[in-house]
Length: 228
Image 1 (cartoon, rainbow, N blue to C red):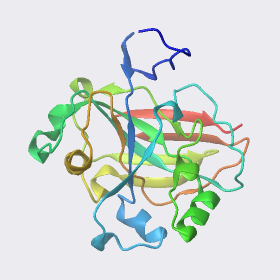
Image 2 (image 1 turned 135 degrees about the vertical axis):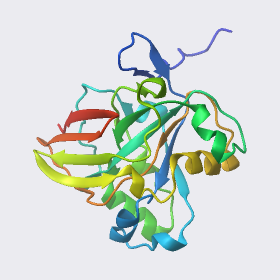
Image 3 (image 1 turned 90 degrees about the horizontal axis):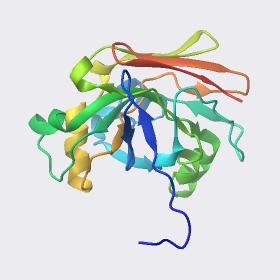
């Protein structure tokens, strides 16, 4: 069918060791999924079910690209996360079947305009301007699950200019990857190409222009990003 304007190009993520690419449909994010991070944000993790927000597919920043410091903010924070990419979708997915829906994993950063988020929280408004801005989700190449398995533990870390900022373990997640997929599929009909950012450990903090950020999930992937 002819379109009245050119359609947007698909968002494609590189796959480690392959010339093929992974097409992205939606990007879901899990809030406060590590107990220490929930506490540092002023919440009690023992009483909160998982909650979700979204970024846009074209907010993903592929490896090798710089992160341009965004406008309308003076307090942008890093949040390193394990990223899950789905090869199958569905609704009401059972936790014991959830891993079969996964294509692979990556490491990503959920950059957040913390000052805009604080204003939104105070006013009871959505977080969209704080979370879903251009280039706000740098991501590594995907590591297929067929190559690395399904990591349930292992270090997740982030450094700024060589200084350790975030250091945790996947085993510290309040909600596991299968549980996240199950809960999401009760709210949305998931589909191939969906990407899930699974939450961040404690130690989030501000970045500035000129910073070099390095991060990784041991056994999955690593990523380097310049803030410009």
